[in-house]
Each structure stands twice: as C-alpha cells, then as structure tokens.
Image 1 (cartoon, rainbow, N blue to C red):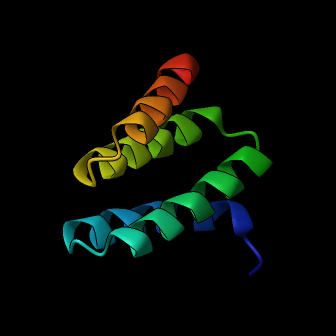
Image 2: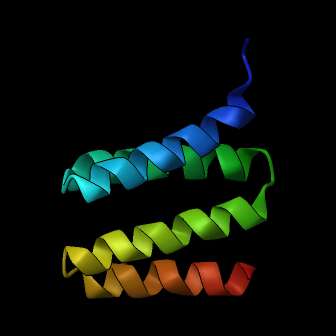
Length: 78
C-alpha cells in the first residue's frame, strides 16, 4: 500500500526482537531504518523512542559513548 510511515513501527519492533535474539547488527539496522522514517515524517516522539533503544543496544555492546549520545538525543526530544 506504500504506507512508508507505518513501516517505522514495524522496523522498530523487528529491532527489539533482533536485540532479544542477540542479533545486534540486525537490531541496529532495523532501528536505523525506523529512525530514518521517523525523521523523514517529523515524528519526534517515535524518534526519541528509537534513540532510546539504540542507546540500550550500544550499552549492551559496551559502546558507552554511543549509548550516551543516543540517550542524550532521546532526552533532548522528550
């Protein structure tokens, strides 16, 4: 149907599933897809949620500076 905006939510959920399965690069790709769509459509609240998940992912990977940047992005939006 060409509903690109609704795809963002599904990418976000796929990211969460991949993260739970410890498929971290797949999770990151899905979160990035969601984030790009959210930004394109100006959905700042959803962007903040995705930045938060990217922060959790980076933290799990012990990429602490990346985690901090993502959490700070989320915080600025919230």
